[in-house]
Image (cartoon, rainbow, N blue to C red; front, side, top):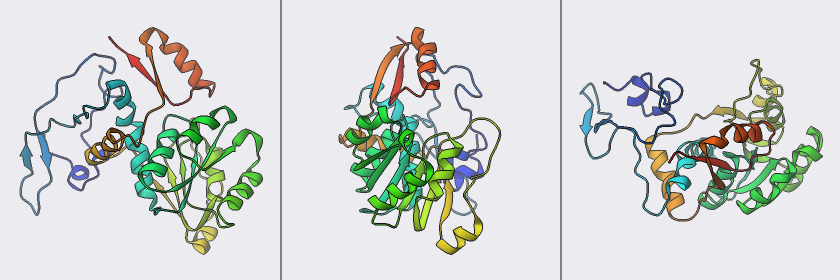
Length: 275
């Protein structure tokens, strides 16, 4: 199959021909899958794409030092967090706020930011997730259940020298988190959309064009990442800089795991054992 325009421009997550297992194809819970031994590389000009056979089609090699259970969450949540931080434009030593910092995406974003990119992190989440957020490398934790919007903003400003954060990564699937996030940015800061709120579509309540123009702030979105991002994320884990907070459960526990997620009690990630 010829690569789509999105792939040729290096935006692989938006491939027009993608077939996502579990969404468009059955087989999410199978024990293994066969893949074509072709990988397309974009070519210059109007020449056809070159084909290499050293990597199979979007099957990312797992470093020997990582178990399957430790690697699995990195190939979705890890890549997504890594790419979002890259898109934020934050530089080493700058402050980043991560909303939903104790979740499956968030705790990896905290580790990648603090240990892989030398960023200073403020984590926001519910109180029970404080330990995993701080253990992941955040310098400060804000309990979202103990603050209102105004006091969260005041606390972030106090922690960041009165200016706010250079980037705010919204990992929580919450419209309220997005509305809070815009007010946590410093001048020229970037809000990165990652978490997808459920229900009726809503705009970001505090994204006022006049304020954004005056403060030179911006909003970008991030969806998963490229194969290169996957390899770089796995390399961080192989070097011990990133470790997934996870537990392994049998398929029979799937309903209980979903209930735990719905109640906001799940910390980190759950990996299903299909053996």
